[in-house]
Length: 159
Image: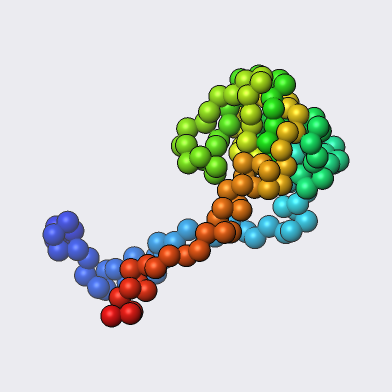
């Protein structure tokens, strides 16, 4: 017998072994029916909790007005600029507005900015600014009013 590590198998031997052992593949999983997948998802407690939370929410972000009280839990997007009245270990991802990469802790009396995300903790606050008056709204207006400048690509095409 030859050393398999250096010479390998002869073609005839490889064909014989392939016929005896079968191809080197793993059988794909059996496809699951849509009804079964949906049923398993609905049986998951976390999914049921999320569905219940969606049902309990009655006011869409577009209908929030100054003076409304907004309660926030981890994962919620701040719908408008809020003056926090309660904050329990509240930290916000402000990267969308400020570019800050780390969550920023906020407490009662401080502002939670529209468009930020409460990453940790809980909080509540009174809406103080909405629409274009909010921090996110002001940024959107500035971007909308900014005229595109000449880019390097434009300058090269003019040459």
